[in-house]
Image 1 (cartoon, rainbow, N blue to C red):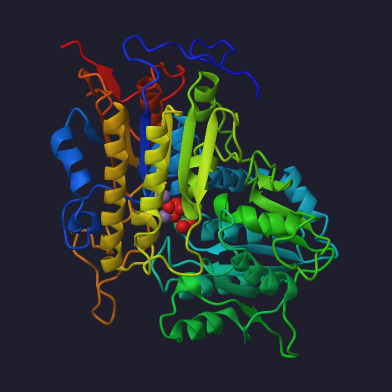
Image 2: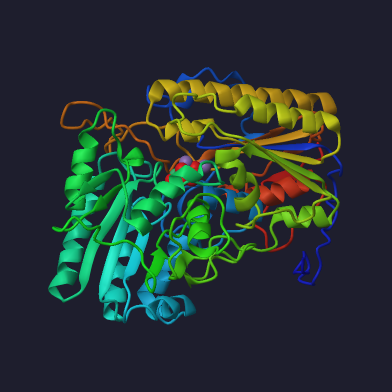
Length: 565
Ligand SMILES: O=C(O)[C@H](O)COP(=O)(O)O
Ligand SMILES: [Mn+2]
Ligand SMILES: [Mn+2]
C-alpha cells in the first residue's frame, strides 16, 4: 500500500475528523442490485411486489432521509447519458467516490485517436500477424455494458489495416443487455463487415459462438464449465453444434424450445471439408474485446496461466494474448492489453482501513466481486486482512435465476445480521442480487418474488442495525427490475410482431433510491438540497461522514449535512 493525496493535497491516508458526526457506529451499507425508481405500472416489479421495508424508508424518509441518485451515463463515467448503468461502473463509483472515465469511454478514445494501435498490447499481438491468425473473442452486442459492436467493427478494420491477414471472430450472443433475438441482426452486421474485409483480401470469418451465460462469460468462479465450453469451441474447434455459417447457427439454435440469446449452446463453424474454420493454434494472437472486467477474468486466466487446474484445456496453444483492457489490477491480468484501464485508486475502502474502520462485505457468488472487487476499484483481495472480512455465499449454478428468484438473499442478510450483532465491524456492506439477476431473465412473475425477497433481506439487516444502535445506508447500483418492458416515447409498452409485449431484460436509465437512517444517526442529519444532481459517486463521501470522517477533498461531495435544530 502506498501513500496518496489526502484531504489537504498532502500525501496521507489520514482522514480529517468530521466536525459533528461520531466515530465507531456500525454502518450497514446495502446495495440492492438492479433496483431503480420508476413510476408505478404493471411492468414495474418493484412497485407490484410487496416491499414494505423499502416503501416505509421512502414514506418516512422523503426528503431528508430518502432521495434519488443518478446511476447511469456520465454520472458513472460512461460515454453518454444514453448509456444505462451497470454493476461495474455503479460499484466503482459507490466505492471510489469519484467519477472515472470508464472502459467503454477509454476504448472509444483510443480507437478514435488511433492510439490503440501504438500501444504495447497491440504491438504484442501484431507480432503474430505475419504467420498466425488474429482471434477476437467477445460479446456481440451494442449494450455498452461489456463491449460494443461499433468498437469491434473499428478494431477489425484497424487490425486489418495494420497487417492482420487472417481474422477469426468468436461471438458470444447477448440478449441480456439488449433485447432477446437481436443476436440475428448483430450477426448480419458482422458478416457484412467480414465480407467487406474479404473483398480486400483479408481472410476474415466467424469461427464459433454461443450464448454469453452458457459460454465463456462466467464470473467470480461461479461455474468453470461455462468457460470450458467456450475454450472447447474457440481453441479446440469442438462443440455439440456445427454449422456452415453463424447466421444459420443463431437462427436454427433459436428455434429450439425455450432458446434465447443468453443461453445459446456453443457452436463451431465448419468448412466444406468438415474442418473447424478457426481453432486457436500455436503462433496465433487472441484478443478478448470486452472492456468490462468481471466476466473476462476467468477466460483471461485460461488463456494466460501456464499452471491452470480449473478444467482440462487439452491443448494450451502458444499464443500472444491481450485483453481489451487489463481486467484485474491486483493480479495484473492479463499482462498484455490494448487500452489501459481507468486508474481507480484511493477508494473509500482503502481509506477506511487506514483510519481504523473494520469492514465486513458479503454477497453470493454472482455478485460477490461487486461489493469487493468492483467496490475496491477492480482490485481483488483485501487491503488489510486484519481489518476486513469478505464472505461469499455460494450461488446456485447451472440454473437461470427465475427458477430460484429468492436466490441467497436471506443467507446474505443472516451473515450481515450476525456481523452487525457480533460488534466486530464498523461497516457491514452487502449486495442483494435479486432485482438484477432475476430481472435479467425477463420473467416478470419471478422478478416480483425476487423483489420481495430483497426487501425481506433489507428488513433483517435494518432490524439488526436497530438492535445495535447503528446507521444504515440503503441504495442500489442501477435500475433493472423497475422496468421489464420496452416502451415507446410515450411510455407505452411496445409489441412484437406476434402482439406480445417486448420484454426488457436489460438495465435502465432510471435513478436509484438512497435512504439513510437508524438509531445511531444524529437527529439533525439530513440530505442536502444543494446537490440535486447527486449520483452514486457522492455516496462514498456520505458513508465516510457516517463513519465520523470527512472525505478527501477530491471526492464528490457528500449528500448529507447536519443541521443544528
Ligand atoms: O453481466 C451481466 O450480468 C449484465 O451484462 C450486467 O449486469 P450487472 O452490471 O448488474 O452485473
Ligand atoms: Mn448491478
Ligand atoms: Mn445486471
